[in-house]
Length: 300
Image 1 (tube, rainbow, N blue to C red):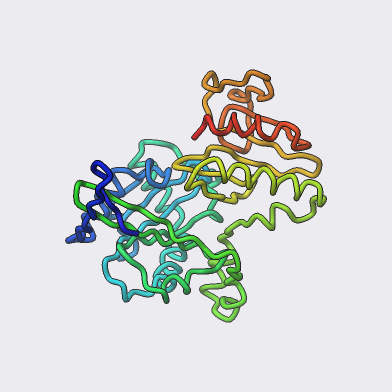
Image 2 (cartoon, helix red, strand yellow):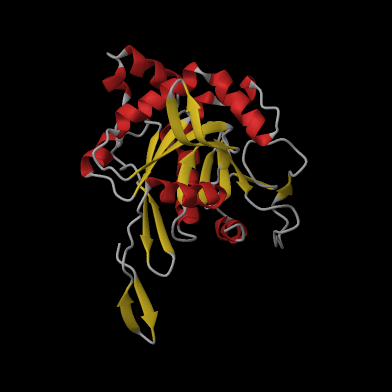
């Protein structure tokens, strides 16, 4: 991606500035974890069993630990290292909980953590095509994020997305007991799993709402979770729970901030629910599609 500065319709190329050290990338991410990834920082330079984790973070939406590693070396095997860290966490759950409680002064319990949602994120200025292909599985708990630094203090951050045709990694891990143990315990959810077993009408309704939400703004991502499908731009703007006869939509806005003239959204700020946000809608058809999109757009 090439960046330009527009001054009176004259474009001047913004030159890239290389990061001198991995630590420079780490400082940018750790200082802005919530803004970049929606995560809480637990510990920088967390050491366990003679292995050092660059950044240990926690996802409060999925209640899962996230391991972040920063790389300037393009020759590493991200899959091998990723599975090593995932296995390390699953074998030492108590140590991660102790570190969380001591660092954040909280009382997290083992049963509070969804270990199946654990994942490893690699951050680098550039990944090779082989690295991208090696992680292009729909159910691998390894993510790649590219970061570039430019003059004028400009930072560009781009998550590497899986292709729509990405296959499952499980057939490749069944012959290796260590890898099989990780893939059996850690689960990466897909839209297909959420749509399995529901009627064609509900599938079609979901697709209409999904496409409409994604079209609200550039950069909106679909993030299937265990109990719902999140639509995220910086943070969750909407969460869709697919049920047998309807869609349950939660809008990622705090109570009192939504302009809802038709009063379609229900206040669930004091009611337990799966998705994030204080407003809930039960949808059985697309009659109010455009109006509901106007509500969701307020959460962007």
